[in-house]
Image 1 (tube, helix red, strand yellow):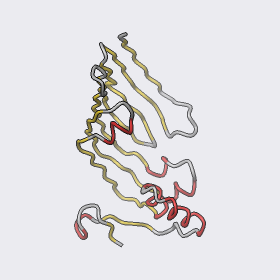
Image 2 (cartoon, rainbow, N blue to C red):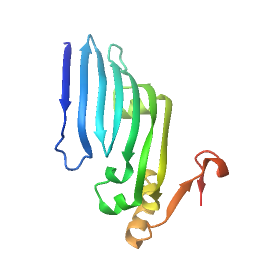
Image 3 (cartoon, helix red, strand yellow):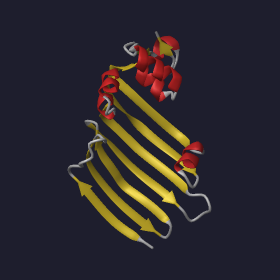
Length: 165
């Protein structure tokens, strides 16, 4: 089966998702799926991407290229307490490829480049703990109300990606 579908939405009614609009072109040709483009307005910014999935082998081969611009962290969280913990815009580039028949397998086997940066803003302890999937520490911050502290990442003083406190 082959397909060529173009979809544009200027407004998306999804209260739990911070999506504004969407522009997608889906092409399916002899076991190769391409989404070119797959673009979203999200959380006050946008994500521009292309995805290619080749299912002609036993393991699906996937390539993703994406550009993230002006996405506001606070708008990504539906919970007001979490939204207070994350202020500022992020941007960057993603270029990954992997193999597998599930998203987990594709991501687990992926290689490539991911670069995200944040301008002026802050990310609180609670958001940091949730991003690290440390449930015990996250619950401690929620219950104690101690989630008001912030981590600052300083590339020059502490090395790339090391927290400066």
